[in-house]
Length: 161
Image (cartoon, rainbow, N blue to C red):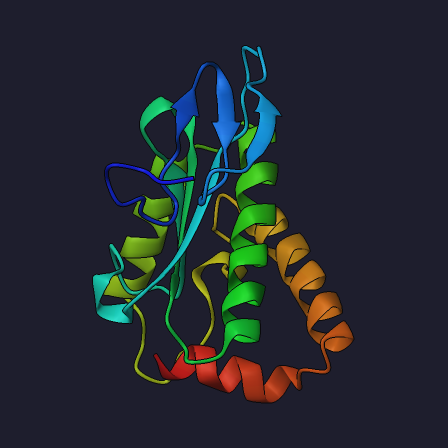
C-alpha cells in the first residue's frame, strides 16, 4: 500500500474509523471508549529533559500519558526507566497525587541537592509520591533481575547522567 505523504513513527492514522499500523496493516476498529489509553514513551537526549531527571511523565494533549527517558545507549536500561515511570505514574494518578506536585517537589529537591547526595527525589521522606516511587523501584529491580542486569551497574549509569 502506498501513501501520498511519508508516515512518521509514532504518528496515529485514522482511516474510515479503523486504526492502522505504520505501513498500513489494520489493527481493527477504533475503541469507542470514554477512557481511551494512549501512552507515548520516547527516548530523548538527557539535556532535553524538563529538569534534572532520567525519567519524566505528564499528561499530554487529549489525556495521553507522555513518558520521556534519557538516552543511555542501552535499550534495556531505557526500558527499565520507562517501566518505572509508567508504574509510578499510574499509581500516582490512581491515588490522586498530582503530576504538578511531583514535578514541583522533584525540581525543588534537585535545586537543593547536596553535592554528595545521590538519592532520588522519590526516596525522600517528604516526597508526595514516596510509596508509589518505592513500589515502582521494586518492579524495576525485579525486571532488571529477569533481564540479567546488574542493579549496581545500572544504577551507576543512571546516576552518571
